[in-house]
Length: 548
Image (cartoon, rainbow, N blue to C red; front, side, top):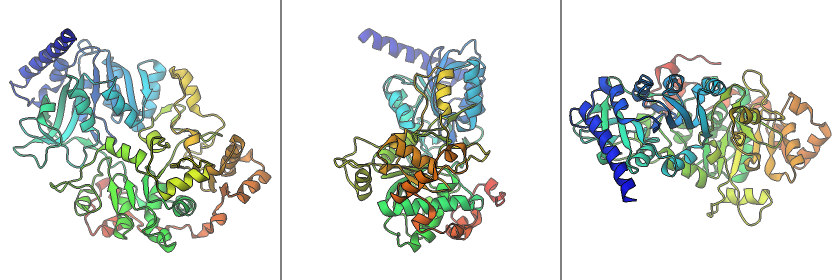
């Protein structure tokens, strides 16, 4: 045991010695030497974690790694939350890395599918965020971690600012297994606003010539919210939020959930729901949540990360958001995922495909998008023991008298924007499993965890179903003018409506003609700025968008 430990320590010492030669003996490495540094501290076959979050990116380090000499660095095993940049896949195209464990590949999903088909990389697994973090701590500890922060001092202490996201998890998983931690930062300062990562956990700091890349991923322009999304939002509130008294919840990204946020001060308020629903969120600071905050609906928001332009608004609402003494948000993706799984009564999100059993996936033909946090947020946490009215009622509706149940809602239009049906007899994930050599098809949320599905047609309350045939019938009833929907007999739909397993707008007392943009508490990005009293500063690209 001692021999193994000494070898491990000596290897670390040798790597740090090579790094020190490039850093003039200190922790600060000149940015022009970044690729040399990575070639010095990374060895062939290493497991490397690079911080690619939903929003902030260690982009300087990603480019430097992609520019490394494949003769010196090869056979790397990359472990990362999100594949967001072309350089994240360039390492596989250039032969620097050949194995990948990840969670989400949104903007690179199509390219990733191409590389898998060509055999340029092997996917170990498509993880949920929490699952990947857990494995970093257990059987996938990184040998080298490449992370990003706002500021550092000369001792290597890091300040992550509002976008802490994955940084603490990646650093701790690496530093306490004898690994090497390299951080790119926007600037070196004498004194940090607060210390988010202790310098003793960080080996090398690289001040970059320009700030790290960050995307306003959670911003949705109200001008682009169509009437069908508003109708779906109205049904979500009437069929789920109101009867189950949903107070603690997480919203996924999308225009349908943005519509829910924007009609809380109008539609929900008119139904007398202020103080009764949507009071505690686990959510990034969505700009579309501003009107609901200003209207007094929202009591607290726990954040995975921040959102560009929301910094001043968040700082002025320390009663709502987790703001430190430095005046900035403290976010944490791992802790927010835990909060979303165990402290929330509802997860409401979207998908690309749903089959007859209610299984859903975002892994489709030619596209491996991954899952992110949806399987954690959208799963019944069977370890939960505390009660709430929503949890208890969902359990009773599901036929379980011993335990409660988390509500998991999928909001999806019957067809995707390109016209592809959202409801299918068989998920593409089954074919992907065969072609990619997965042991199991990459299902995002299993059907037995889904309690409701909402389309522009209506709501399927799967909690009330007592057989697979009833579940299938409920889903076909709301699948609209698709092959999947047309396979349903009108008599079956009528029977399900009579038992409130299927609810159309009229069954909920909703007149579809009232689902207009007039219900939105903000009609545009400019309205969100006004609602924030000028504290919200939207990124420039959102000021150039047109209504659609």
